[in-house]
Each structure stands twice: as C-alpha cells, then as structure tokens.
Length: 295
Image (cartoon, rainbow, N blue to C red; front, top):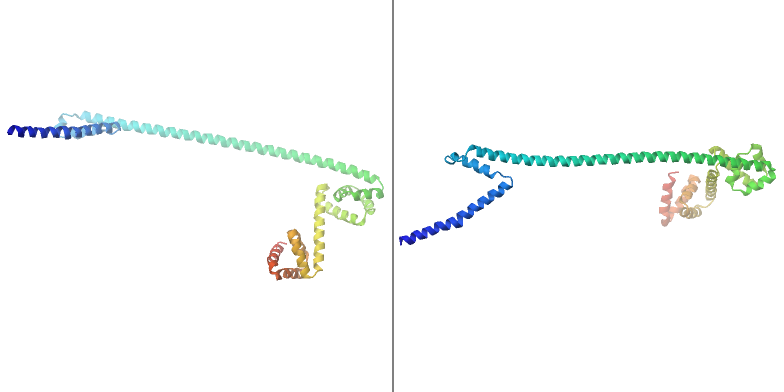
C-alpha cells in the first residue's frame, strides 16, 4: 500500500516536471532568445537581477553585468549611427534635388531672357522694315502725284474721282496747294467736298497712309450717318421714332444709342416714353436709357 502511494506521488511529480515546468522553461528561454535578437538586453537584465541576490551574486561576477550593459549600449549606439547615416543620406538626396531644381530654374530664366532679346530684335527689325515700306510707298505716291500734276486739271480730276477716296486724298495731300485746288475745282462738288473733309482730317492726324485714311473715312461716314438719322428722328412723331429706334437697336445697338444721344433731350425723352408705354418694349427702353448714361 505504501509502495503504491509512493509510485502515485512520483507520477505526479514527474507529470508536473514534464508537462508544466519544462514547457514553461522552454517558452521563457525561447522568448529571451527572440527578445535578445531584436535588441533587448535580456542577458544583461537577467545577470543584473541575479547579481542582486545574496547568494547568487557571488557566482555571477560584476564584469558579466558590465559586459552585458556595454554590449547593449554598443547595440543602441550602432542603431543610432545607422539612423543618423540614413538621415544624412536622405538630406544629401534632398540637397541634390534642390540643386537640380535651381539649375533648371536658372536655365529657364536664361531661355526667357534669350527669347525676350530675340523678340526685341525681331520687333526692331519689323519696325525698320515697316519704316522702309512706308518710305517706299511715299516715294510711289509722290511719283504718281507728279504724273497727275503734269497733266491738265481737267484730265487729272476725272481720274482721281474714279479712285477710292483714301487713295485720291493721299495723292492730293503731297501736291502743292495750287495744284490740288486746280484739280479739285474740276471734280464733282460732292466728291470734292468729301475729299476736302478727308484732307482736313488727314492734316490733323498727320498721316498719308491709305489704310489709315480709309479707316478715318469710314469713321467720318459713320458719324455723318448718325447725324443724319438723328436729324430725321427729331422730325418724326415719338411713336414712329420709337419704332425706328427699336429696329435700329436690333441691327446695331451702338449706332441706335449714338443716334439718340444726338437728339434733343426733350425729344429723346418722348421717344423713350413711347417705347416704355408698350410693356413688351419697356425692358428695351430701360436698356437704352442705361447705355445713354455712358455718352
């Protein structure tokens, strides 16, 4: 009976040793090894703790603890050095990138300067070419004017009448005053009047370029048309004038407003009132009134 109890007790001790103690010890050792691999100073900490025990401190010398701490410090120092090296490498890469961007910016700035210089040179060349072309054109106009002045006024006048007004004006402008007056005296009175007005405007703007003269002639005709329409509207009944202004505004807003601005203020008010009486045209009257404020 005693032998069976001893055997059962031994079996319990054996069970505790193999089932609990050894697996736990294995787990602790494996965990310590893994922690040591990841940089945690398990050996140094264990040696330090064991060195504090009254009996065990005689077995574990202080040198072992110091070596463990030194090794741990060395590992930490190496890690810091690695991190510092990585940061320095990143900083160097950023500096190279900044330097590259600076060089590219300088190159773009240089290109911009070169383009600006080329544009300036081209502009000067265009001005010189334009001046030379104008000079050549003036020579041609003067030579052609000499041909017409060598003719009799009666023969030159019909030829100039058939030309475009701006071309006739450019030729007459380079002639002497007595030659010009002799030719214009033989022209159709209306044609001569138009040319006189154009010559007056030309002398004010100091230009003999046919293109500029043509533009000025169109402006003069436009203004004359506006004055004629304003005079016609002033003589019409407000309702009829309102109908005309409505049709004119649909075709040319600027001209319609200019015409109304040339009309007497009282008559203009009557025309706008006639427009506003019709509800469908009230908005048009308001719009025209708003535009008239700028004239």
